[in-house]
Structures are given as structure tokens and as C-alpha cells.
Image (cartoon, rainbow, N blue to C red; front, top):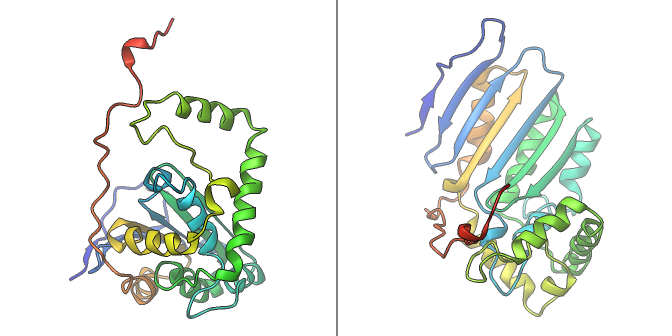
Length: 250
């Protein structure tokens, strides 16, 4: 049975209506009905990130994010999702962090259902097309090389490299051709998605000018059949990344 909450504390000037749902597959969802919005949007967060990379494949979580855009069983054409969103006045993107990966889009209000249908397939039946693997490894590598000129990124990597070698913090997050262009990488990708992409680790947000009842109908239709693999949240029980006794702040 789905759990629902529709009573929220909000300002008197807030015209939006809100509803929180927890689906039968344990996916959490926040719906927002905004009568004034000119676009609809959705975001899905997976509580999986670069700290979950296998030691042998730094950057695998980021690489998985890239590959999900390149076709699904229902929509096998490589750019179908992006073409649909762009042709309906929208945009899309994604990002991989240490413990979360976030996917999102915005689109014209009338195109929300079609966009959600295509979007939801990322989390149900991606193709991970073998023909796109090398190209996307190169795309990840290009992103890494661009980051080499970013002082913030360089500083983050210096901090990571100085962490305790037994800590997950001591690793390379982005990925490159050196870390990903290995025999069997597609098999590792399939294993990663199958192991970690579970409904119980996902949180969905949808906003549109449609009534809450319609937004709920779309959310249930497209997302409640994502598999709940009952994946436990990863606990980081390894040693602390830094010896705090050596850190001095003046």
C-alpha cells in the first residue's frame, strides 16, 4: 500500500500544492502542482555515487551515468530521450557525486508524460549499447582533462590523494580512459547497475501545472515498477580518512 502525505507547512502566498508518496517498491516521491509554472520538470536521485566504485574501476559510477542516456529497451534509439526533451522546449542533465547520482530534465507542460516515460526507462531497462562504450569512455576522459584546469577539482584530488589509503576517500572519482578502457568494462557496468540501481535508494521529484491527481497517476505509471532490490545503504566502516591530530587550523 502506498503511503501519502498531503499536509505541508507553507507560506500563505505559496499557491503550490504538494504531496509526498512512498510507493510499494519503496521509492520516495514528492509531487508539486504549480498553476503558474511554464514548464514541467522532474529529478530522480539515486543514493549511489563515486564512493561505490569498485577499486579496480575508478569512475564507474560516473561512466554509468553517461551510458544511461544512450538508449533503453523501450526507446532503443540512442538520442531519443534528449531529442524528445529538446524538441519540446526543454533541457536535461545529470551529475555524479560521492554518494549520490542525480538525473533531471525540464520540458513543456504538455510533454511531461512522454518525457517521464523515456526518463523512467533509465532505471528499468537501459541497453548499455556495446557500440557506444568506447565513445563514452572518451567523453568521460575529455571531462577529466577539462577538470585538470579547474583549481577546485585539483584541490579536491590533492585532498583525496592524501587520505588514509584504507579509506574510500583516497580514490579518483571522475574516471578516465586509463581507468575505464579495460577488458570487460561493459560487464562491470551491467553488474554495477544491477547491483546498485534499486528503487529503495531512489527519490523522485516532479513539478507541473497539472493537478496532483494527474501527477500521481504519471508517477505511479512510470516509476512504481522499478525493481526494489532492497539494497542496503553502504556503511563506511573503514578508518577515518584523515588523522585529525595532524590538522592544525590557525
